[in-house]
Length: 480
Image 1 (cartoon, rainbow, N blue to C red):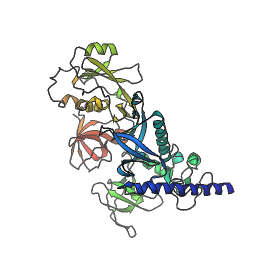
Image 2: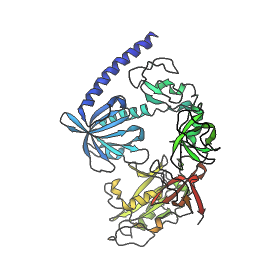
Image 3: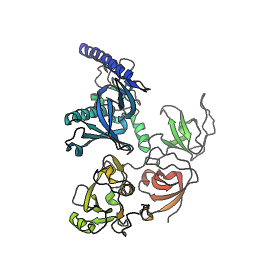
């Protein structure tokens, strides 16, 4: 319609102005090796103070927020020196209400937390109004790259720049502008407006992709159901040979193609093979995303666990102990089930332990998979990382003898998880994130947990590291 065409023309004009603004940013940022327009449209820019979880000092920085990233710079006269590019796709934003109570300037803060618990960032604004504006813009940017309905009807919509004029698959109107005009599902090729994602017809390719991706992410695993020695040969492509039972990582596999590309896990050799010669490996899934709630784990064997204990009872118990003595108690009537209680100087302090989104933490800035991991971390890292006035580690479990405060902390074997079995790695396995455990063929693995075994993953230790690994990659030697 004429109205649709007029809107399209207006959006093209507006994008030209936006690209002009982006070009000005581009020329003012030193050491920038990428084109800023690849990051979407600019949202807001200005001066903030930034503190990374690794570097605890507040630093003056100038930020440029785009749809996909926040660019952290240091001002140099009229130009800026690039310090960091933070990809929003891998982060979430959370408020920091504690700092708002501080009357000092630059005390209005919020966090950008990595979804896998890696390094996070804390931003400080000069006023509450300034903080509100920045948080609103972050929310908008994140809703653009991670729209709520991106996976509706088995699609996988992503922000996309369409080279040709394209109509929305749902409403049939133009996707307007000159770059990142809308969203594309790479599986079926459908284009859509953000507001139309929910009403797009089901993805034709989505059902198959959904089945495979539910089994595993980042390279589906297939198992050979017949021997393949290169006959017939893939036309003009390198051959991947294998035998029945071999496990193959799928690199490229069009459901309508007779030839797929893959990598043999045993040898790391890659090539093409008949798609009919393999089937999905049913047990090779990601580590369980929904870890068993901490309430289902028995902590009674640990010298720091006190079970159900009221606050007043805890105060009376810890007052007679030295500074640094602590316990973890249950609070069954409260929203947060666990609390850390610690004697610090002459007072007993209490810290709520939060369980949320499959993570456990006492501050959004540092998250853990379990209560045990949290305790072990703060046995060697000061609580002042989260609470400024609490400069102490978790030194002495209340059930153990009080150790000399001058003694250097060393990890006691009492904190080692119980070994329930051992296994030998049959294949190499490369960890894809910090939760996983890399294996080399022949490694002896201590098995700590088979929870998640129905999804194909166990937890264990080898070469000094603990993490999740595929149970099908090891051969169990026996239960201890």
